[in-house]
Image (cartoon, rainbow, N blue to C red; front, side, top):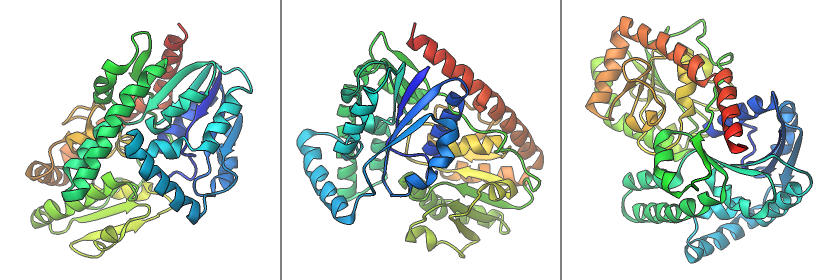
Amino acid sequence: MNILSINTFFPFPTRRGMDIVYLNLLKTQAQKHDVTLVSMRRTGVEDNHLSEIAPYVKTVHLAGGRARSLARKIADAAKYNALSPLLWRPKSTFYDSAPEMVALVREVSRSQKFDVIEFHHSPCAGLVNHVEGGKKLLYMYDVHSRSAARLAETKRGLGRIAAKIEAAKYRSFEPGIAPKFDGVLFGQEEDMRAMAPFIRKDAVAALMPNIVDTDIFKPGPDAGRSRAVVFVGAMSHRANVDAILHFQSEMWDKIRARAPDVELWLVGATPPDEIRALHGSRGIKLFSDVPDIKPFVDAAAVYVVPLRIGSGVKVKIMEALAMGKAIVATLVAAEGMGLTSGEDIRICEPGEAFVDAVIDTLNDSGARAALQSHARETAVKRFGFANGRAELDAIYSRLHA
């Protein structure tokens, strides 16, 4: 098939889990289909990475002649801040439907016949109004109205009010845009259930293929050699920052009281000052902007995912499963992934139960080994390329039935 893939986030350099999911999807599509990619120049480095994506796409089109200047960024922010409440649309939808992106999408979608036109992430879904032909498929990596509502619960004062307002905008935008698509794919089951009433009866509603490269992410030679607890995630992402700060303030000292020799390794890019300030205290070590996270994950005894906000599939959990890690995660983190607590992973609420789970996993080598073995098996079976190809083929068959 001939596929037009529209994603306003260029996947290189990979900044977050959703970039990895998208890249693995492109790798899967490239085995059978021709893909044309339309994306945006956001940082100005996208052109430097065209060779990295070339094996997986036929053609790449980037909107915008160069990265936005500081003056342009300030002007756009002021304009979109004014338009967002006036038109009752989330601010991110204005960035993703910038004039240069609209013009490029129109031009490319009319340049040839596409069997499927795919839109990645709901903020760019408004671009569907500017394409012609082809079955239109929306990938909702997460449902922003749900994640924004959860974010609001962690805020106070004006921050909480602003987050609630943004969640309300998404509650209007996402249900309103969903009926324009012939298919809507979701990162997890709870998101799909939340959006089901708003999808056309004749449209495909399914879970998107969530794929991890199990040949790259696999147990290494130093598996579990340390007593460390590791957290991995892009620290520009507010859900990860919230998780780290809450974990270290409410749970870490309790873990250290029962296991004084244990360390907490924080591994991720672009940590803010409040995360950098944790380095060197109470057994906490920060490893920022490392070229490869795998050695840190491999060496750790326990992999923690204490998320309190967000929705969608969690790439960090898929990668940790593939590396055969003993994982302790919150309900929010493991939500909708179909994982069995006590077999694939340990799932519990943040607080005393989470502390107990970390300590038990650290100290019980037999239980830890069972988790590690089952994790790897589940990753290969559920999230490997073979299963991803089968799921994608089934979705395309339903779309063209």
